[in-house]
Length: 99
Image (cartoon, rainbow, N blue to C red; front, side, top):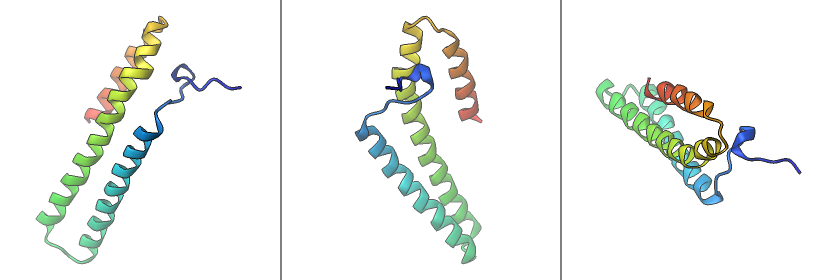
């Protein structure tokens, strides 16, 4: 049987965590579709920009949740195993998220 631990670059989140993330992503998808409709309907630019800001904030929230879970499980596990190079990978990922 194949090992699906983080060291093999696979996540191992609980079904509940994945369910919550999917729910949040579904709501974000709805927000993005609403933004598309707003543009198609020539809604006032400021209103569209506020919706875009809300969607970005929601997506950032998903990223923060996933980053926290990643640090508490995958990263911690690899550090315990002596694979400190995971810190560089984590820093690279954080820098990308902050752009």
